[in-house]
Image (tube, rainbow, N blue to C red; front, side, top):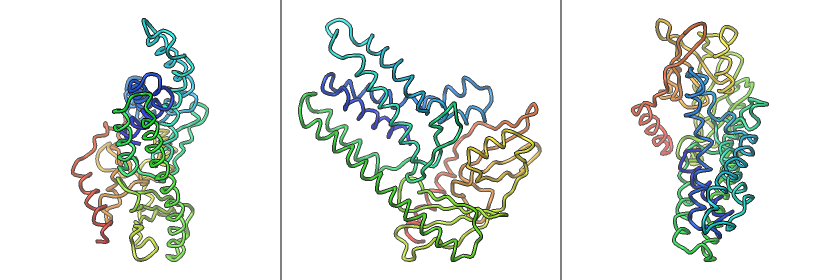
Length: 340
């Protein structure tokens, strides 16, 4: 999920492990631990001199269970040695520091699994991306109550019992909301299957996910032998079905058999993708797990990459989010939520 959410969850882990002993400093160290896996965005650019490889490194090894264990021991032991000096010698055992970093790292990668992007939990042994698709990468209904509880507890003494109350309240509210999103996901999947059957489409498989900033409006995509079909459904709709499916062709102007980079991107997109040639040595790769900017234009995916051939491989231009595109998406989501 977004960085703020991971910071809040990491801080909660720090409080749970060492809050009684070191107070608000536990929140700080937990927040640091909760941020570390997402530093793979920067390390990818350092390790690889290739934009596609760098992008695919995100949510790879640094989001794995193995990394959580190794990093917890390294960071925990290192901070233990640095912190336990002077008049703080003997105040915090090394196992508590290792535990703090393990839980802040491990909860980060588990939380990411609930989003559509995908997380390689078992890297480097497997590149399979776990994605449960029940919550958006940014959902204020999950984050804000949790954040408020963490801020409130900071104003109490580290041994004050009310501090524990606000920690449990924050964890409880966020956990209940997460369970609710899972229930919504199961319900929406059932609605999507019914809608596909009523539309007489011979579906091979499908995927649904909530749109950004909410868990009410959902986007669904179904795959057939020749096409993809996409549609929206709101929990506030009067009809319990996805309506007005839009057909998207399986456009493949670059084939995975010809380029391993397309094969890797297709795996990243869970095979929901299209590739259009848009100019001389320029192609647009669309990740169709995410909505279109314009429902009438199949090459208008909100999550797309501009590819080009370079030294026998494919590379891509650095991904730069377009503010205008983002605004268009948010306007469409808002209108659809209102039934417009």
